[in-house]
Image (spheres, rainbow, N blue to C red):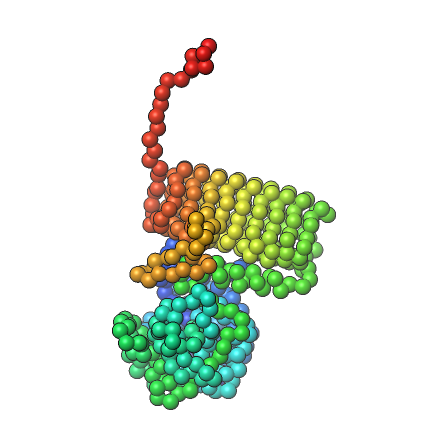
Length: 459
């Protein structure tokens, strides 16, 4: 598919989906654009496209680095792709030149349906708006953009001290023509910071917005009704997929395909949605709702937790345990007595007796007896250090293994460790710290060999 080269024509309203370049902060999944990482049974960008194309936009534009998968997704939803070739404020200035109003969302962010509706309502009124949410227990005001907000946004602060702000800024905005000049003349960095702060010299949409506010442009406050999440760090994948599982929890009836083979002994304590060619053998227990894709096989005695997603082509082996809110990717093979909790990508193979807790990349081989620890000895959350800043949330304990890795028999992974893509870990290794991509990790051991025999037993 060729990139869109149609003439730019003025429209009443437009939706622009921003798909940022890959970031090292997403290690070990930084080789894939965040918008293409899995969210339940599809890439996150596809979820965003499905949501925004429900509304009557005159045009939907995806601003992104070149990637054939983005091209294909945009084509499927009748959107146009334009190359991310300039700094973001200037790209949005160009887009605003050809419309009156613009909804801006990120392709690597989860914005709930109810909140998109709120933003669209503001857009239809012709006002500028910003999606915001109250700080939660594990939020730290210094980790992003905060706002002092009532019915309107009074000010945007960069990495603020907590007493300056009462909400954090989500990456979903409505701009009208008033914003054109502020985007066009946006300066580097972010000037509205507390004394002693040290902003960098990157370009930020929020800089254009704060300048506009200082010149009298009114931004309506749109408070999140449901949930918002953006893939900034690898553990965010767990939260986004948990949000997908929450939607499974809302099922109130079965949607079982007519050719599903469902043994009479299967016990169900929720509702099922199944695709084509699904086989569920005897003794399987579903503890709650479950969404099962096409060509899936669940073998004898498996226990499937509440609100799980099992994607196309996967096999769940004998007496497996799939925990609540777990997403099993496409073409997975989960061996007998394996225990899975978290998110797996495409083609993961986890063999017998392993316990997996975390986020597992494409085509990863989990060996027999692998153990992934959930909590530290002191039951606290792991503090992750990313580019000099520290983060600790209920999701930072997740173990993250990049694409095409191999583990060894009996590996033990401590909470929160990350393994870079294309790495191999030998048998018996205890993985206690992050491993760079393309690494081979082997255990060096010392053994003692002595003579032994029947005479030792007095014969």
